[in-house]
Amino acid sequence: MRVARREQNPTSRVVQMNTDDFWSVELAVRMGPLVLGIEYDPIIETLQDHRVDTDRLSLSGAGKLSVPDIGTQLLFSEGRPRTLCQIDVQDERLRFGSLAVIGKRAHEIVGLFKVRRKDTLWCSLKNDGGTFDLAPKGNTAAHSRELLASGTIWIPSLGLGLTLRDGLIATVHLCNPTQAPRLGSGTWTKEQQI
Picture 1 (tube, one colour):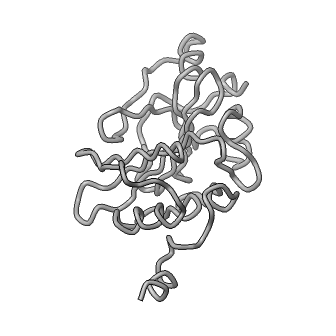
Picture 2 (cartoon, rainbow, N blue to C red):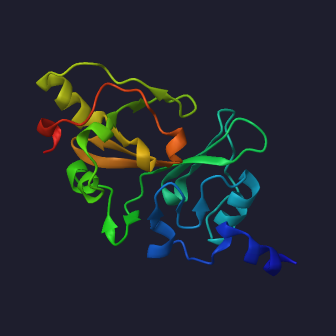
């Protein structure tokens, strides 16, 4: 019976796509009804339950599922069963509590978590399957400008990455802290916190 299964399935909270609950983040756990670690089929059912058009969605060989209706890319594990391992969001409706994230300056968001600079990491994402790639090394002002223009700052302990475009957050990356990058081109410096 579908109702009984919904009571047991943590992804099936009935939340409309255009509500704050759908876009609210619980770090290292979920974005609204999309829960990290849940298998592919229940994620598709959850999207359908929230009136997201899934008819044209297809999982790439690299485990990526782009969901244009919600400005989100879902990355699934390579092994079987395929489970949700990362959520990349560009939609302006995303919230940390009541605070909008997309379009904000990185220091506003990172400051919420009161993490030390040494607990942050500059690291970029490759376009082939969501694996991590090292950003260029260097401590120059030019390198800092480059990172602020198009880098990704991670707080690995929270499973949180923020990709910047011209100093503003363009994409939020959510994953389990154990799957966050551990190598990069350095930490967020005081000079970069503009």
